[in-house]
Amino acid sequence: MSHFNLRVYGILINDQKQVLVSDELIRGLYITKFPGGGLEFGEGTRDCLKREFKEEMNLEVEVTEHIYTTDLFQLSAFNPAHQIISIYYRVKALKAITVPLRDKPFDFDEAQLKIYEEKKETETFRFIDWEHFSEECLTLPIDKIVATQVKELF
Image 1 (cartoon, rainbow, N blue to C red):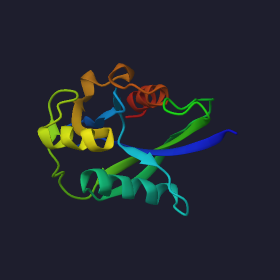
Image 2 (cartoon, rainbow, N blue to C red):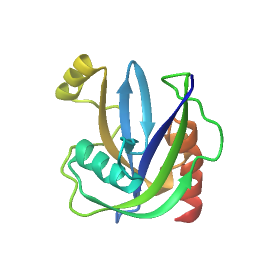
Image 3 (cartoon, one colour):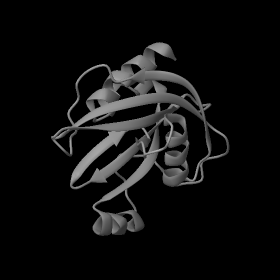
Image 4 (cartoon, rainbow, N blue to C red):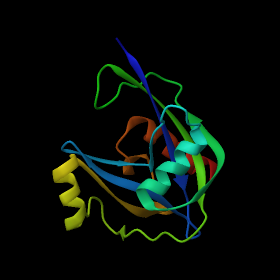
């Protein structure tokens, strides 16, 4: 039996023209992706994205324009019985970011590594300067498509 896994991601570009990404360690895989996550039952896509930013970064965001919805078949990297459908929106931070931001990929601190030991997943965040941002900065195939679109749109 196959299932759909609906994911919602936010594109946050700050005033310095930097793009926010999430560096994650999930079950031994190192992944750089846009912030966001899975839609929960009874939740709208915009509310999902607001919840994800609040949970992951303690950051309230305004969800603005829709950027992309998956229009191709994408198998889940973690479950071969799941097809991924991802929806991307531009988001705007409503206050300053207070979580630690890193300068290099996968720069996890001790607390984040302890979380990984317990949950087999952890994450940290960083900005990538616009001139260095491209699809090569991201791991997931759909994110790569969106990165190219973001560079063309903004």
